[in-house]
Image (cartoon, rainbow, N blue to C red; front, side, top):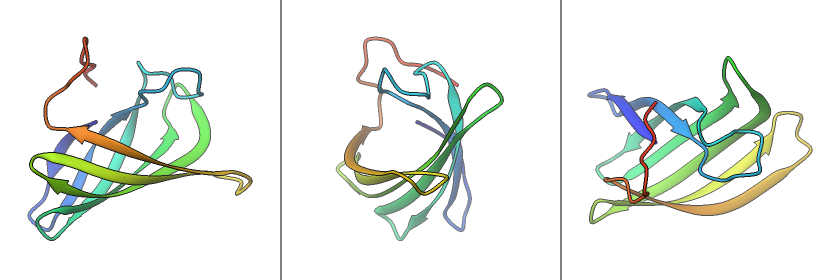
Length: 104
């Protein structure tokens, strides 16, 4: 996840790459991220899994809280036709902790 712009009103824009293999959104593909800060430590953002290469027919929303420069989130992935819903948790760190950090 890369946040490329944060406005004074808390609006966020950026890019998101899926970190899971075996799914429609490949790890090397980037998708638009939009969201907002809520106060100093809460954040909400979403990714519509459609770009100029791929349409995964789904949207994921994250709600989270920042503690000690770590973002802890819960997410909900919904298919755009309403058939399937998945839930889970993600943790995001300010610095990449991968062996190879992707860039949009």
